[in-house]
Image 1: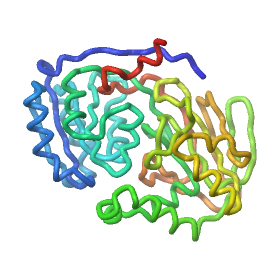
Image 2: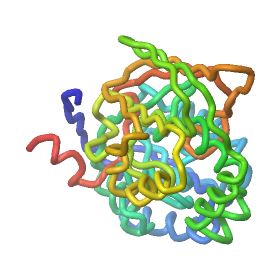
Image 3: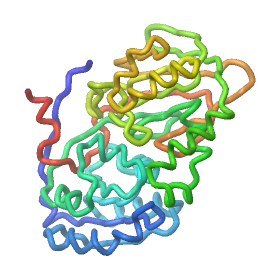
Image 4: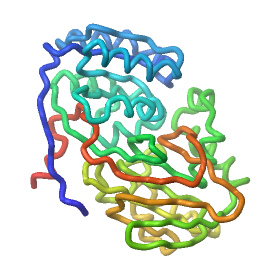
Length: 316
């Protein structure tokens, strides 16, 4: 694993101008818009702009406008896909991102050790502790958690907004069952910096964060500030093997299975599906383009609010 160098800073959110955006289309967005605004202001956070977002497509322009008006911290209440859609505007500048986890999976919040309760998440922002994290890049677009092809993208195709609102986290296993009926293995070529391999796969994940897919652990020691991507290849499996892997998705031990191949310390990758079938790319829970795909890591590219305890393991 790459050496981890903590990059921590405390921001006085009582003094810097802060903007609040709540995606009211997120699973819990409408319910918590007023609560988040009240709790943040009561904690002394200098919220000078606040928006209840009703159309996700307008979010990038809204964020760009806030940055242009001098906002120094943007608090976003949403799910992972919405977060991923704006990080391109925040890369390598002095604007800090705060997260209120209002989505279905909230894997980015889990990766940052953020509490999933709104009041506690607001308190993290009020304390002002920040760190810089890595971002992944696929075909020129930044992402926070994971980009994948294969089964993960098929699951997204079956996971509707209505299903997530009604079923919550259960929407993912429901969609997985639907995808399993139609998804087929595919041949793929992966070009790393030091080798090229060809294999057959049902799912390939290129992960930056620690969690994805509603709590699946990328690897037991994965971090979002270790300057590396982790590539996991799931080869075709019979039902028994799928069960063996599935029972260990949440503890990360599935990577020990002989049909799962893991590559660490990846900084660049070219992924090409062989044959005539292109594969959709799942980027943080949203479909975004098709293969072929070029990946790379952007170290320490985004500043985020984190709990006071975040990163202490790096110093031990």
